[in-house]
Image (cartoon, rainbow, N blue to C red; front, side, top):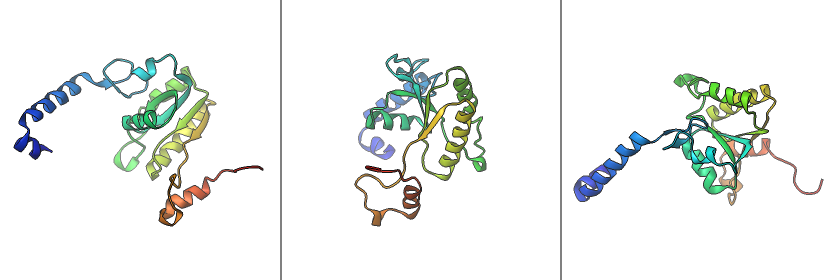
Length: 174
């Protein structure tokens, strides 16, 4: 990209540079959910029509965008800005889990939806979050993982298939 801009679009490069400088100066974190915003409180947290009884925990701001674009979820979020990874020196303090604990204490949601990625670190983070929620008597759910819609079993990797079988649910008339 840099080479293209230097060779063919220096004016576009200047505009991009100015936009990035402005973003770095004006965009910060929402004091409630830690998502990216130009304001003290982001538009999601400031929206009185959102269901404050639902709190979705995600790893990054891009996860908020993905959920907002793909679903009809109408609750609030808490952005971890990572996942637990002791080998990388990322523990509960680095993820702001003390802020989350205060939020659960002051304004406990009726349900906490854990939407961390299905990696080893994401699963460890999900377990830790579920323990936090249980301490505050908050119902916990985990987004489903497994075979993608339209996917075929023969092309699904072993760990995804094992996880899908381990997390199976009842279906149809019982």
